[in-house]
Length: 182
Image 1 (cartoon, one colour):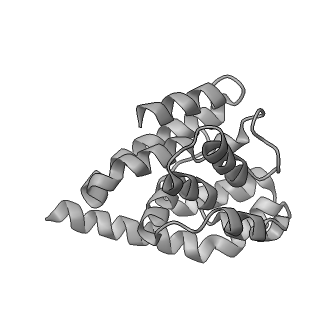
Image 2 (image 1 turned 45 degrees about the vertical axis):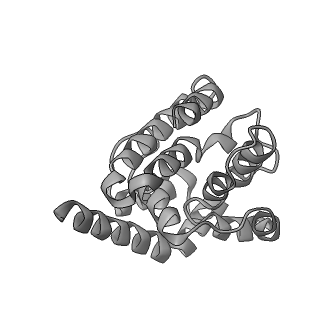
């Protein structure tokens, strides 16, 4: 996890400080899921720190950050396969990949991760604003639409993904509440 944090910092802090702030907060949010994930928490924390590295100017090749980040982790960092899959598919990325004509590439190169880990990473990302502030999922979705505009490919994708995003955040919230009540 420390390695993931250092790698994300090296790629994002200087060129994209706001994205770096977001990644720091998503990483911190992942730590809160330890009661739910147990030994899988370290993997989730690494994915949380690294989920947006594909935005780094040095890595942006396809124009689709989940794919660019996962490829870098696989090809350059030789990262764990499941970590690469989590980054590639974070926050319903396959829906945006469809909009961009990249779904076949994404799914051929990276199989979807287990649902509980995917949902947990989505929870961390979709309850954290672009500057690292804590938001509820509705606020986060509204912020994305506001930032990108109604007709942008990101907004269209998020609109399509909203039921899945909300369901994943609600499921993770409920599972965490159960795990901490025991």
